[in-house]
Length: 274
Length: 249
Image 1 (cartoon, rainbow over the protein chains, first blue to last red):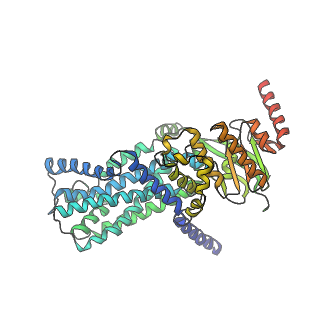
Image 2 (cartoon, rainbow over the protein chains, first blue to last red):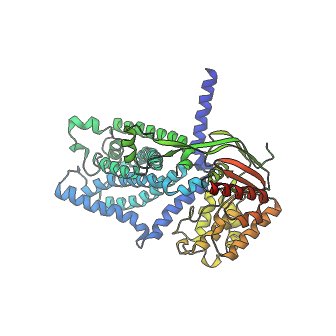
Image 3 (spheres, each protein chain N blue to C red):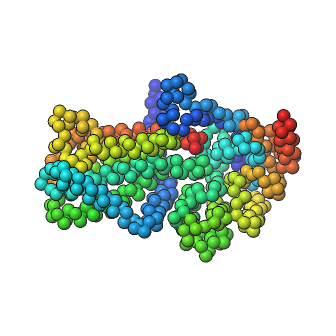
């Protein structure tokens, strides 16, 4: 009994050192992979890194037309495009991290067969390099907010803990999908489908107020509801839906822990699969 | 135990080979009661010891288990049973292109590739001149590697791997690429390492001449077992007999 308890504590400490390992011993590798991702993108095309800004702007343009000119969704007292942008940017982050993570292990299969290092650095490098993209795209959002003279609330800084929750969520999903795609190569198509459906069950292009009252409790099971609504509350000074945000935090943590533990267990057979 | 560089004790490695590589095939097949994978034994009950400074060739047909042996040494896969002891860092020579990014310059790729191989920033900075000089790519070092020829790729890859401070070097069929002059240079460098006895080298190759000229000891693997382990000349003789028998059968 006592021995078992001790073993489980040791195990837990062991997991914790695992968790931080990529940031200690593999810091340089991690930074090189992040640089590879960012540099290769700005070298790849003529418009280069500007793509990171053009992509959300184009989506913004089309969605704004469809949902504010054609469908005329309400967006409270703020301009629709600002309302949309606040939901769209974190969503693009979710989308790019998950799509890229799903391919990360398969794309690097030659390395999996040859060199030993913690495989999660591939996923972490994507999570971080897309965060850099998110930062630059947010500057455009800031310009929008300035242009429309939307006054920001003093609770704006809450976007950072919310971002933390979101990072836990996407990292967890990235770890799961990258592994699944190594086993079955069509998971990448499935992940695209899931992402498309997920976008429409999240309050990105429409406000939460349009969701019928009798469905709202099911709707709020989606952790992205708490996160995106949380961003809007933080920036525009609406009252926080604490319960939904807390739920998002719990789900995201569970997804991350599950993803991490599963990934570290499966990691040992990665080289046998590719 | 601790004075060997590589030690395998009764190592068996088996893994599951998937029948279906897509999820859409897996589901109907599982419903029909087909297993998701077949068990496959790549190495069975292997024991071997390699001393520090030894240069050992692994020979055998394709699919005999050579690559699995290399993967076990590199630590990317783990034995199903038995024990493996490796003392010190292992540097694999990575295949053409893997670990490089084609949009990045040769210079940037040195950092990327060396980081993948476990080097830190300061170590790379200290060795970068040496790496560039050995690769003979001074003129093209700031050119994106997508413009490199396969020979140039290989020169860069080899130069990085050779500069890594790792006591164990794994070389897998890669010397076949590159021009004759550079191949000779590589062999010369490898011979220098051999004479200095600083590194243990595991050499996997089909090139009999290269193996005979470079490795004193060879290990022959066939059907996931070690058939012979000894002087290269003798092991090759057994290998030829084996091939001959198989062809006759």
